[in-house]
Length: 333
Picture 1 (spheres, rainbow, N blue to C red):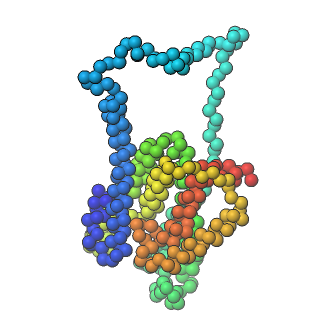
Picture 2 (picture 1 turned 120 degrees about the vertical axis):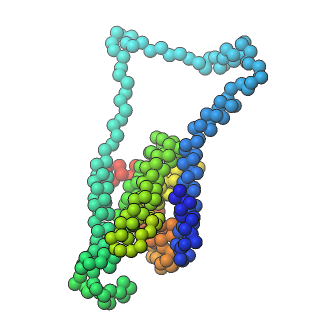
Picture 3 (picture 1 turned 90 degrees about the horizontal axis):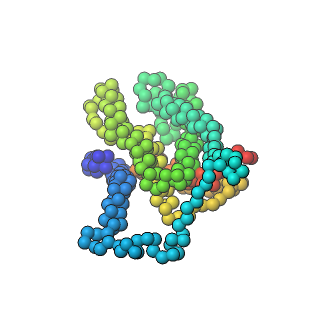
């Protein structure tokens, strides 16, 4: 449904970037639907194939009785029965089975996520008070040039609000991508490809579809009605753009993990991290300057200079960190 909606509105878009995003979304959602179909149908198809090819076909002679008793002596010798008495030979109780090792608690990551969630909510509140979108709040300069800042009243809410937004924009969403990716390798190992992908499609894709097809458009209707504008039920990505791209990154990882060997890497030295950060700064600046502003939101990514310079590298680092347990290295510092 989401893909059909996006394809249906391609001709309604007034510029090339919006048309590109609609096409990108439509193809993106079809690919996700194919992943979902695989997850749902794969067990049934496998069962049908096993029933069809794993049993003698109708009309074929059954295996002779003399050949059905394990085959040759080598195969029979490979079958062993081990009987363990409930008590040891000296009359004592049999040793209790070894307990599974307790999962290491990482309360600090939970605390980090709580802090980041607080920052996300506060960030978006400050956005509304810091721009001219919220008419009548009285916190924004009456006359303002967003390019030159020359006519802005620096006694308004703008200076402090702009500082808060910029200071947090450069780390908080990247940290979310890192933490989300950190648990992917172990989850993939535990569930396998199909169940891992199915779980992500339900938990992430379900929330995104619920907002973009229902909650977001309804919120838009309320805002249009409150402002006295003509009502229009329109597609809305909104804040769940993060969920969409987290799901994309996760599916890409799941596919690559089926073919590529895991990356074994100890946690890099802080100097190496600093040098890598300098490289990412160059990539960030290059995309910000080299890619036209109107294309920075292609596919509902919120500014591709953040995507290339922060989000993709931090998600990748989270995958490598989770595979090699970097957080344990941090704990032992």
